[in-house]
Image 1 (cartoon, one colour):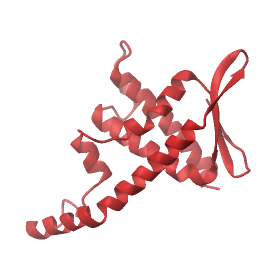
Image 2 (cartoon, one colour; image 1 turned 90 degrees about the horizontal axis):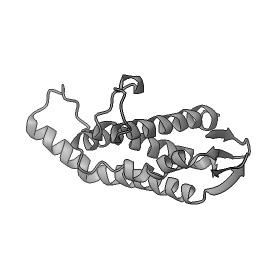
Image 3 (cartoon, helix red, strand yellow; image 1 turned 30 degrees about the horizontal axis):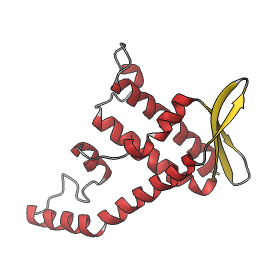
Image 4 (tube, one colour; image 1 turned 60 degrees about the horizontal axis):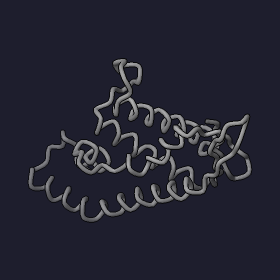
Length: 171
């Protein structure tokens, strides 16, 4: 996979293999925290720190208000980012290079924040759902497993996020 800043208000993913494209096509599903309370808590944290010296009833009231008023906006923001990424991925085309078919797509720089949001959300959910180690090197070797695929996804997502932050958003 090649990540290219085009310096024309767009960035590109080129020479994306079928496996890499498969991992990218899973961003929206991977970002769904359903069934994983740890991921939900991480994505939608309480506005009250655990060490706050507040009456438990006050904490409950603050958290209830937070869920009612801020929660929908946060969920809507995540949803819009995921939809943007999904639309961008749907525009991918197959390109032939050196006798091999690759996927490629060009994305407006204005979508970079949505991509970072969606990729970060997917990484957080993957790590919590699969109880992944913090470093890929900490994984035990063995046959390809669901955990191995989740680590691969997370690494690909992290690589794209790093590129976007350094080469597109930092400009």
